[in-house]
Amino acid sequence: MKGGVGKTTVAVNLAAGLGAHGCRTLLIDTDPQGNVGHSLQVDGEFTVGDLMLGHASLESVIVPEVRENLDVIPATTECFGLEQQLSATMQRETILSRALDSDAITATYDAIVLDTSPSMNLLTFNALLFADRAIIPVSMNLMAVIGARETLSGIEEVQRLWPERGLEVAAILPTFVDPRTRATRATQDALDQDPSIRRYLAQGIRQCLDLTYAAAKHTTIWEYAPRSRAAEDFSTLLNAIETDNNVQLKVAANA
Image 1: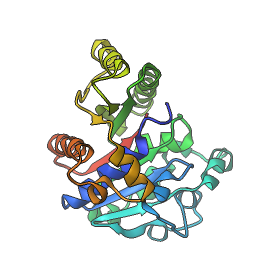
Image 2: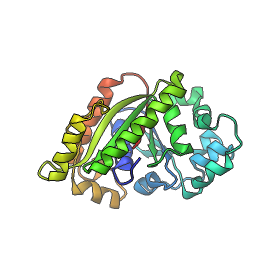
Image 3: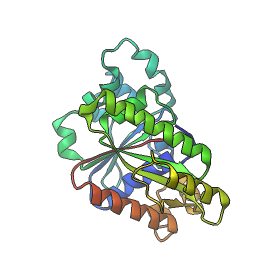
Image 4: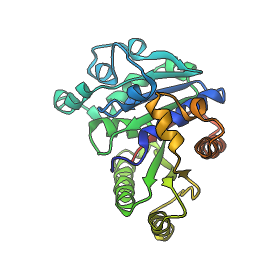
């Protein structure tokens, strides 16, 4: 529920890392800003919006082999209109789940990662109702902690209204961590003391210019600076996720 906390960076590098570890991975952009496509220079003919509107088949919206073991379903700003276009659709919060409920998806992918927008809009609800795990990035400022609490409240609402979906919080993930700053220390203290914050990965993703440079060059951290501290931190995150989930993954990076 806050922009600028690193949701797309986490989603892209988590998905690419899973792919590099041998997991057949599908990365779905459910943020109308389309930052996944910008980050990886994906320019598909169709988008997640076309899939949800029934304008394109599942096979046609998937851009294959964007990276090793990594396929992508992109989004564009046209997806901002989905809320209105689907206003009269029954069970519109589960359109994405129904569209992805196929033997082909189950047989093809070991992990599915969804990037979300910083609001509880229709696309975000569709992502959360498809996912079985949520990762909540929290940047090192107290406004992001408030956003994390609001996100947790939204997830609890999803759990209450759709208990059969089995959505759980996989990790509260600090981002832009710099232990030398007061902002980081104050935010970490707030996270430590908040009883609503569960599955808190204290190390998180340290502040690292290599992540900025990697994004500018449309590469992942593994391609741009595989020996950087950011790559080390994402490796730690990958190990935590893979250890916690030795079954098929459907992860929403949401905050």
